[in-house]
Image (cartoon, rainbow, N blue to C red; front, top):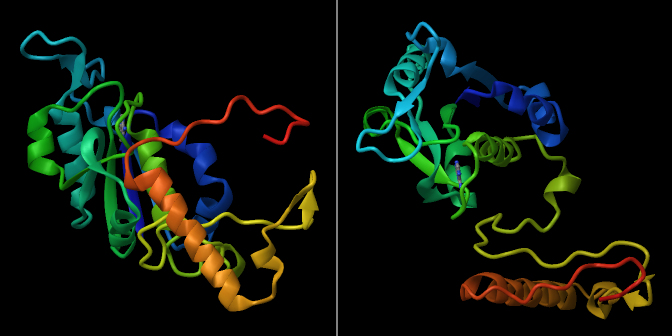
Length: 238
Ligand code: ADE
């Protein structure tokens, strides 16, 4: 899968691309990430890429020209969906990642500080994606979330052991995963749920399903957020 990223801050991606599963996906040639600074396409003599908003609204707006030219250069190499990250987009989900992970190529467009001129959004963007209802300084973090999400879905990127971990939303599930435990069986006086050490596979499966169901209900079904715990202190159990 080829992933082209257009950003004013390509350096934000360097640690991310050289770590963990994403680095492995690149190493295995499951994904190929190319970073382009669209400032280099600006025809302005000062390489300016933004200007005041028509209508007198506060803030600057990214201009259409550098983004259009950068996209044109990328699309000359072949067709690809262009995904723009913005709080105004549809919310990213596992099924959106699964859809894009199957494609040979995508172009990710990351704005920064501000929105893009609507005309380039209308003419050149095929999908708009948001991480959630909050505002970040730019689309770069969303781009990284997207790359991580599609990289781990590529064949042979995750080892069997990694992919066996009870992923939320995977394998057609539309809910959250269940709580996981590892050794020791008792820690700080708290034991692993007895079902997990029963050796009875049907009981274990039923426990996992019921935990996942109730977690999904409390955290997702009604938008009421669960009560947060107070500050954690070493030495306390709650
Ligand atoms: N850019 C700024 N805020 C964002 C968000 N919440 N999701 C995606 N891109 C963004």
